[in-house]
Image (cartoon, rainbow over all chains, first blue to last red):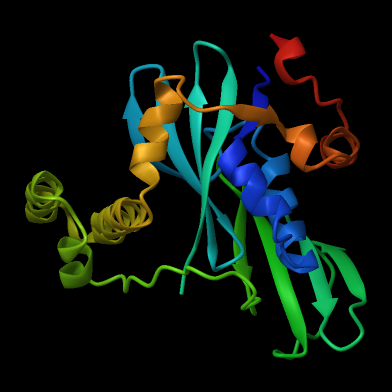
Length: 85
Length: 151
C-alpha cells in the first residue's frame, strides 16, 4: 500500500520562507521520501487514535517532523516541523 | 544497511555512502546524516552538526522531572502510571515516548494534529514543496511515487 503525502500550508511556508539551509533541506527531503511507502515503519509512534496515527520522525538530531497517518484516505499529512536544542 | 550523506564543511562537497563505505570522519569537519535499516524501515539516526539558521528551537532535557513539568495534569498521571509499571528494560522507550509528547505540548503541535484530523487545515501536495519529489522517490525506492493514484 502506498500513501499520498501532503503538507499543511503552515509547514509549506516554514520550508519555503525563509528557506531551510541546503543541508537541513536535504535532511528534510530524505525524511519525506520514506513516508509514502511505510509511514508506520519509520519514526516513533506517539498517539494512535482510531483511523489516525500520529508519529514523529527525526530530521537529523535537531528536527522533528510530526505527521498524521489517515488510514481511511491513505494520506500522510505532515503537520509540523519542530526544532530542538 | 546504512546510507547517508557527508558534507564537507569547508568545501560543501558531498559524499554519498552506503554500508561498506569506510570513510574517516573527523567532526567538526563534516556534517553527517546517517540512515540505517531498522527492523521496520529506515530511520534517520543522527546529524553531527546542525545549522543555527532556524529560530524558535525547543529545549527539553530527557529527564523525568523536566518531562513531567511539560505535561498536562492528565498526561502526568498516565506518565507516572507507566513509570510505576514498566520493567527496567522498557524505561527508555517510556521516557522517549513521553519526552516526545512533552515536546509536542511545548510546540503547540497537538492543536495542529487535532485540526488536521478534523479536516480543518489546508494542505498542499508534497510536490508543491519538493518539486522533484517523484523523481527522488523513484531513485530511492526504484518504483514510482503514485500518491493517491495508488489507492
